[in-house]
Length: 392
Ligand code: GLA
Image (cartoon, rainbow, N blue to C red; front, side, top):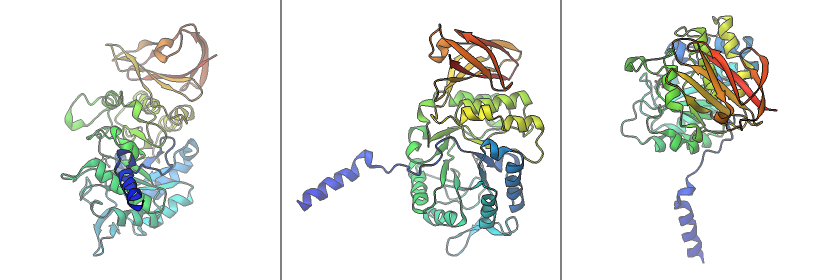
């Protein structure tokens, strides 16, 4: 009998379904916050992060839902003789725990960055071989969010490498959102649901509307949209595709383009990690980042990632996202060079043609006339009209 039980339990352990799943209960809606990388690169410091936390509160972004303040690459310089990771003491004179405590004192959560390989993308020490030690350290500091990059990984297997840190975070005893950053290189949407709360699905974003396929320019907003379309079935509460952090307010796009960038990230149920200088933002940029009606689309509890319902050769596109109350968030997106009229037909949304529906414009904050069968609007070049449609 004993032998039988042993055989049964060994079989149970070796069945494919027994791979331990991520079970941290976090990120039930796409994470929102601020990250240092897009604007400040390696120029991070205790002062910068504390000021960012102050600004998240004073700008109203906290009230709008932004929660995580994340230090990206370059906070770390070496390991000590016992393998403990050491922060840059010039830039973080009070140590990382003091920064975490400050962020927490503002009612926010604190995030940090490391890499699954031997070094980060800026060649600071990575976590390869130190996963459990690092996770214990993060928990002791009060880390709530880990972004985990994929530079210097040599011949490592991505799923296996990320799973080690998932297990280390689980053993650390602290709930920590796990953000995978392997740039979509091994199709993480196929495996990362059981490993992390979000995974980068694409390479690094540039502060550009259209990178035009020039490799050195990285990916513009429109390139990322094309790459994300088709990944919608893999996202949901606790596990999200990540089209990279926001460039809203960093200067490389027009206000119209930034409004479209933000709208499309909301339609994609993307993590909303602001990446601009919160102290110097204009009122236009502030109004984009804190548009609660657009944020509510992103944060809808059903967690459906939207998709492109149709496109035309002149750059007119219709994207839609199913909402938990049966409504549809719709973005009429104009990628073309001149203003154009774009129409969404109810049949593009899975609604019957005869349906009467209310239409609310989420940028004008205004109810429009109700519509039957379709809705049309004139959309500026590189802009969106974003509406919520509800069956009457
Ligand atoms: C990679 C990531 C970026 C950023 C940098 C930091 O390129 O994709 O988001 O974290 O590394 O070096």
